[in-house]
Image (cartoon, rainbow, N blue to C red; front, top):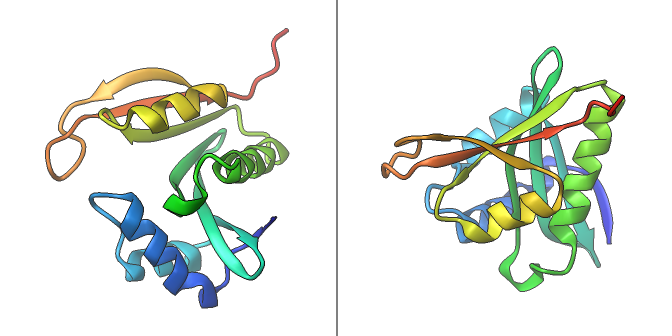
Length: 147
């Protein structure tokens, strides 16, 4: 498996993974716009098949933000998400980010557990964050070295 930068030719497959993964998937136009605006956008590929992707952004001067991370259902629990997130974290470290934040549906216990295993902790709840009214758990990973 390789982790590489997203190409527009990957869009159809990324949309498939997005739609199988989320109740409120981003439409193709948004995914294309995010790419065109210069967000970090990586895919995991094996044997010319896209297994998953991650989109991330530098939100503030010292804070990164994970916009979306998804893996094809057939390839979950095979370290695809871990490798994608690990590569994004390395890129944030390269740019000297101090924190990484993300939002996850409060009912998505599997994702919350995954992020915790990657070092994130729950910071707060945002009530009614999603269009359907579900709350979001805001999670944070500090990249500052302990002194």
